[in-house]
Image (cartoon, rainbow, N blue to C red; front, side, top):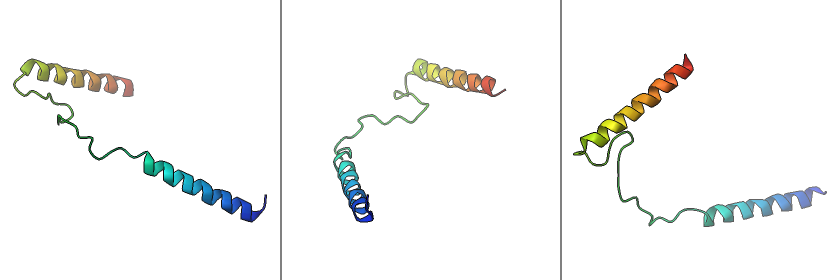
Length: 69
């Protein structure tokens, strides 16, 4: 394979990859309806859900600490 053909194929591959990235980007109009911070419940008045969520994170952290030790 000559150097000229190699460079041509690499440029073609670069153009194809750039086109693929351009058409594969997500649309800008997709908006998340609910904004809930990680580790908190969406409904702040629901104490049972918040307590269960806190217990889940505590369980995960204990499991990870046991694995590390």
